[in-house]
Length: 86
Image (tube, rainbow, N blue to C red):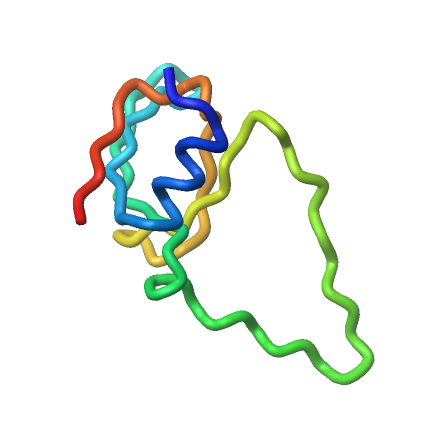
């Protein structure tokens, strides 16, 4: 089984197809990445606005879904398989 750190490193370097089991036991394939070249530009904050930060869950990994063009996350321990695309 791959660790969160190993998967994060791979996602920062490449596009990866991750197959994982969702909470409802369905299996989902997601083409995702953390590579800077694919990530959206951060939203500018309004004057005086403070960026809210979510408490990080050590079991989940937020990624950029290249098919839905949105941030998604999955539990690392639910990964069935993964394949780096390019």
